[in-house]
Image (cartoon, rainbow, N blue to C red; front, side, top):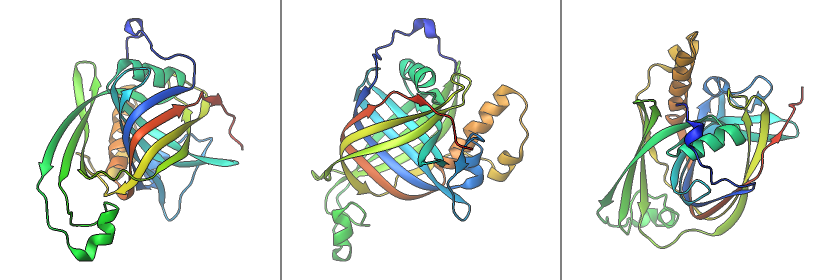
Length: 279
């Protein structure tokens, strides 16, 4: 969707930009062939046995330069540019015109406006099984000693007057008080090479939060055969956009291996810098 820049009054000042809220960071095994469709030729995909590490970052911000908004970052995989490797975003979906405009123009992200529909259902308390007591401590067991909330997030990309369903994400979160230890971490990323920002960029997100492992969210979505999508030769820009959307869904539907819940999140995004990839 093309954002009307004339109607946007930006709350973004000079970097760094601060975002506060909560998030789910889920790492998947993504087929290298799928991820490579997003990676600029200047970078080399970090892969082994035909797979790379991708996944998604689903965040809900209650305080940011763009106000309150939701974000889904689809991570295609890890790319290598000596001396470092960074994540590469295949698609960034936000329900804020201002955040979309900023992501495109300032950070070189493939941002699109989307609709986030949320539904929360309480799951009754179940009896604890002693065999899984240790895993339950970390939220990974198959039985629980306290109630859960089941949150379903439906994400639909908005394009003019139409919309296209991307995925449904089901997240189970217990209602316990334990939020995990407080940590500091950095998530470096590459970006750019889009129609809004042609240069290649590197930027870093510094996170301060409480983190704990949780059971991976269940992702569902409609997708044609992935091999057919990859082999298609697209001509028009609209067809290319649709192909990228389908491949993003393929990333979301790939196999999860670990999920981390971030609470009390403060994320500081540094100013991107232009890079010249090593040959």
